[in-house]
Image (cartoon, rainbow, N blue to C red; front, side, top):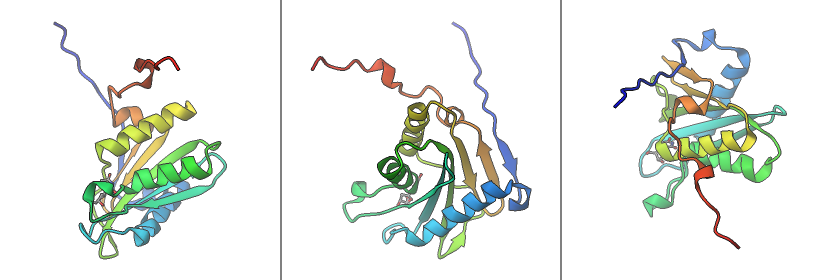
Length: 164
Ligand code: THU
């Protein structure tokens, strides 16, 4: 038996003023997206904004449904919108925030496992690291790669395609 230790790296900031203007702008766009959140059941408004390789910004917000599992998180709304409309553009950075009653929450918005899985595939698809910014009013975490938030990802290479 070998015991192994896994370490991840991320940068933590306590104020938006410490961030690069490009990252601050992306967080602002994610906050703007929370206005389009449809969350009558949870009252929890999540916003995501993606920076694409050509500078395009794609926004997404959580969309709930009375048949609860039919709803979709903000991150996947944004990632699937980007995949649908700008599939030739790499996703460079994804910023996530959450808000309640129009107010940005203090603590960073940390994405659910399903969204991390989709982020991981997005990164694999474009073959370059995707940055992830989890932002709150009092604390911001920046990860240089999805690898740091989803180790031991289910790897599509393991799936053998059935003969067609
Ligand atoms: N939600 C997101 O939009 N992103 C996440 O990563 C986690 C949760 C949404 C889903 C639901 O509309 C609300 O937050 C409460 O769970």
